[in-house]
Length: 145
Image 1 (cartoon, rainbow, N blue to C red):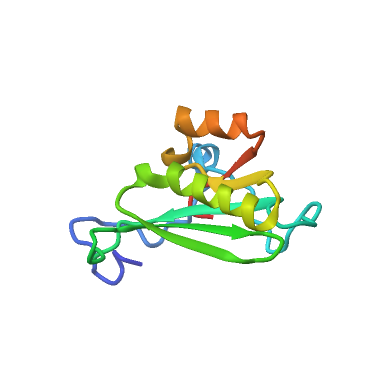
Image 2: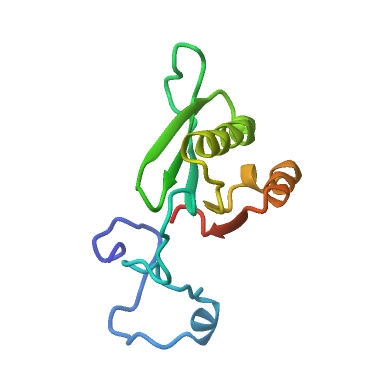
C-alpha cells in the first residue's frame, strides 16, 4: 500500500505477482497467550489476600517537592486503591513496607499475595528477601498488561 500510494520511494514491486507463503516468517512469528477478559481461577475472599502493585513515571512536570513517580496498591477483594508519590523507583520497597504495615494495623491482616509486572524494581534481592521473610507470594505478569 505504501509503494502503491507513493509514500515509499526507491522501491519497485511487481503488483501482478501473487503473495507467497514465507516459511521463515511463519517460524519467526512470535506467539503469545491472550490476556483473558474475565478473571480466571478462584476469587479472593478477604482484604489483603491479593494486592496488585504498579509504578508509573517519570511524570512531567515533577511535583513541587520533586516527586515524579507514583506507586499504586489495589486490593483485589475490596478494589480499594492506595497511591503514593516517590522521588525515585528505589523508594518502592519503603512504600510497600508502609502499605504492608497499614494493612496489618488497620485491618489486622497480613498481605498474602502480591501481583506485579516484571519491572526490575520488584526483583531486587532486598525486596525478594522481604517477601520471603513475610511469607508473601509474589507472582509476576507480563509488563504493561
